[in-house]
Amino acid sequence: MSRAISITLASIALIVLAGCGKKAPPLDEKEHLKVVVRADGAIFADGVQSDLADLSRRLDILKQKAGVVWYYRASPQGEPPPHSMAVMKLVVDKRLPIAMFLKEDFSQRMTFTK
Image 1 (spheres, rainbow, N blue to C red):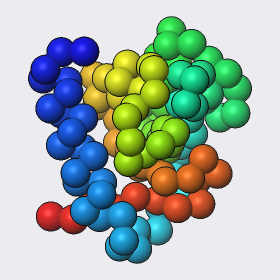
Image 2 (image 1 turned 180 degrees about the vertical axis):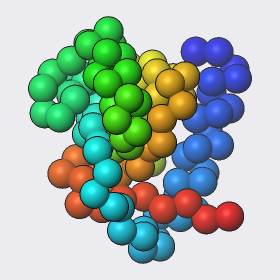
Image 3 (image 1 turned 120 degrees about the horizontal axis):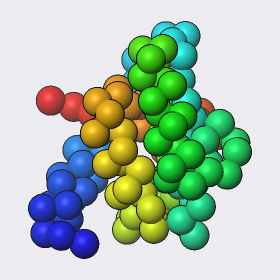
Image 4 (image 1 turned 90 degrees about the horizontal axis):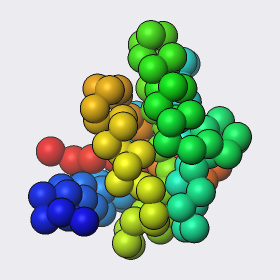
């Protein structure tokens, strides 16, 4: 993993940890895609196992609908599972908004403080 990516992930982790105790504002009912990266690196998009190419296509469709990515990865405060960096890169490259969650059932949203 490149040093720049490691620094970026470390920064995100610090921001996430700083805001985890705060209540997130409610999400509106915008179109969204629930993306899960499990500990073994398996990727799921709206409950369907996907590879990076399939996820990229789904994100393109979501972008056309001005939607939001709902994202969960195993062990949010620990080391990222395989493929989580590639998934985040896809989301960032496509300039999609993202809501990050602490639980795989998307019941607890992460918050970020300024």
